[in-house]
Length: 305
Image (tube, rainbow, N blue to C red):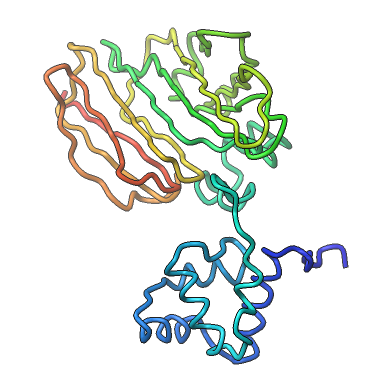
């Protein structure tokens, strides 16, 4: 069968063995969770579901202890599941997961439409580690410049470029010009898609990376549009970041009356959290999450007039 799982792969074998043991014993995940809790181990239903689907594997000490408790409960010989967990090299990250990416961007998003067939390999060779961006709101109350610094790690050999996609305010895509530049190195390949309100760029790395090597990429996105008003800026995060900093600076004549930080799991749903954000004496505010899990992070602002 062409779509049969690769049962010689340890990751797949763990998921298959775990799922089959659950089926054979007729155990819903709620019973597994409760059994673990009786042994002082707290794991969520989602975590157990990820184990049986192969989306993630037990790695943390508590998860490995859970495996030892579950083997007799599932009728498995001691060490059966443990033997299917191969050791991960330091810095290992999950494989490219289109489902997870669509979970943040939404199905058939503007990003997917802009990338076309390239969406299937959207930065598959790189893992973002740190993202720092400064967003400037001009005197016309419009985001006219975004400066970004990204630290990445190669997840396989021969990584050559970083693909970035920025969603634009509709007026910015329709009027004026959009420039995406890098301070060092060759110019990036840039495509503006006004019908999708986005810009796509492939930014060359300083050199080809081998697996686990890191690189730092800097770029700036500028607009010459003079019409329209911006009310928010957000970043879509598809894999966990070590650090994310969004620094927003307002022109002194365009300081808003209120700002909010927000976080949502995907772009087409209401934020899970939204809280007032203060401005400092330099007309700036910033967002610096303690943990940056996948989702949508942003700052929204309003003027009274």
